[in-house]
Length: 356
Image (cartoon, rainbow, N blue to C red; front, side, top):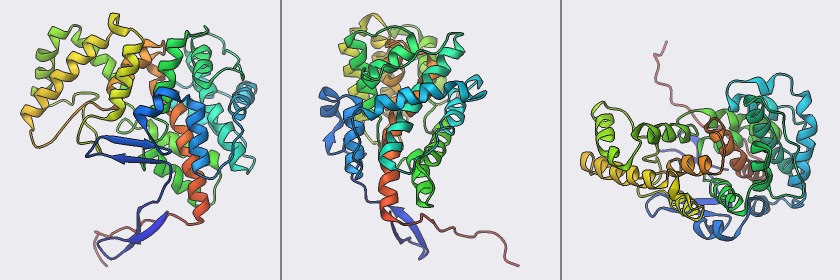
């Protein structure tokens, strides 16, 4: 993390060098560990991308460590107190991950905490449904094991591929709010578990990770493709936001939306919400363009996230925790990058209050 001078002349951190991901908002391009996200999701599993991110951050992680991390986390479930009783899955994750005792070896702890996030999220979803936790299978892929731990059933290959596509797509995304929170904590010399707990707290906020569920609520309210325009017009007239549209960085359609839409097509989801989602997206984009031609508002990753996660069998209450299941790979890699710099992140403030 390189401190630079801000325009006010105060010292502060405004940028960071990273080898993990690159976001080009103007072109609608996302590069993760040296690969365009569209290419990556065609061939790579989540554990492959996690290993690539860790490798880019200077960590050598045994591929089997992720499965071992899930097993270790499952053994710890009975010692989590009331964490799994939390009404919100992100609260359960925050409390549950805090029980992971760091070893002090980043390469070891990155895999342990990544495995733990998946196990805790799945166990919370099972508890919420009144069902017992499902023990992980360390020989299974991360995506396949996640689906089995949540649903209690072995998923078919198409659903596993779709789940992998989602996990890979959101594994890292530049210096977003939760990643920055993790790097700030890491910069103080604290441990990776503390950094991930901070990141989970940032991701819980609805302005960062909380929109996929409401996208499904919107689609349910619209009901049919023919109902899209009147419903959307009414929402805009009332001054309400259209869920899943617009992004702070992308000025064009989020490339991750295209990846997830393609994954849904491969799932043969035409019998589900995909046709409705496409109709709502195209109508919303047109109406928003007519209202604000100077401000592009296109589909973001959350739009098709909602449809995909629903199609593979995850409850909507688990959508934001599932985001964390993927993003923890990026968080832990960023922690390693930050630790390697040996620098404290200390942004400057500008005092605007009264002087004595």
